[in-house]
Image 1: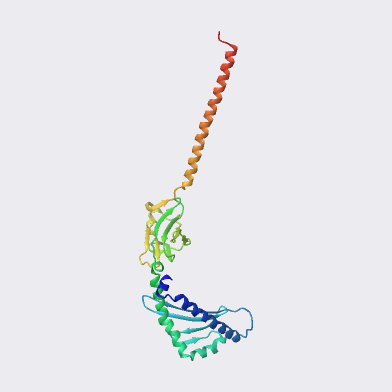
Image 2: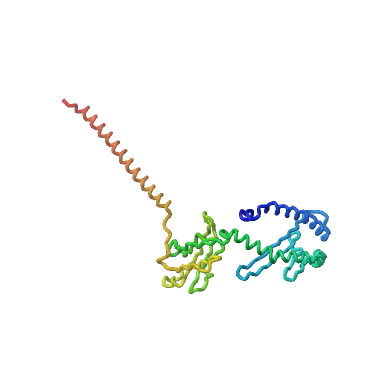
Length: 284
């Protein structure tokens, strides 16, 4: 938007004026449609969507100009046939009127086939750094125990339009596979994992399997072969080692303190024995 306002300093003012005018038009339109449906009161919604799709490879453009009423299609414009389509009987009279308005049709077709595609190209160039951003992930294999499923984990990819799956002999597997959700990372990238059950697969057949990651906008897949030498086994969490270390330290401290208490008590008993002996057998 900063680029848009740099190119057109009056952008906010002109757009605001346009939509303020549109609001007044819709106030009239909704009353017209209410009469078509014989409605006198209540809350009703009139919606309009005008948009286009542009294929940057084929340069094909598809335009859409659709009106809806209370959540249902009411009337739409087909730029190819240059005619309006009325799915509701209440819109037929409006369709007939608009089909005769050649200036309206020429205006709408020009917007859908020329003006809107140019807007798409312009805004795409403004936001290319974020809209066209792609980041490939790091992929690793993880197995908790020798009998656990092997998890293929991909993290650090962008955008979230990605696929992750297991293959055997080049064919995608659908059985004994558990695909997890795509989850966000703290840095704006994403992660996902897919598990493969291998309990009935002999070790010598592992080489027939691989994990494939595909990212939208990137032609080259990331293929990771299933290999025991490349499959990491999960290590105990750091907190486990800390707990063990603390327990050992506490045991050592308890032993030292206990030993000192024992020595002190024995020393007191020895002192008492010496005192009694001296009283009974005083020195000359």
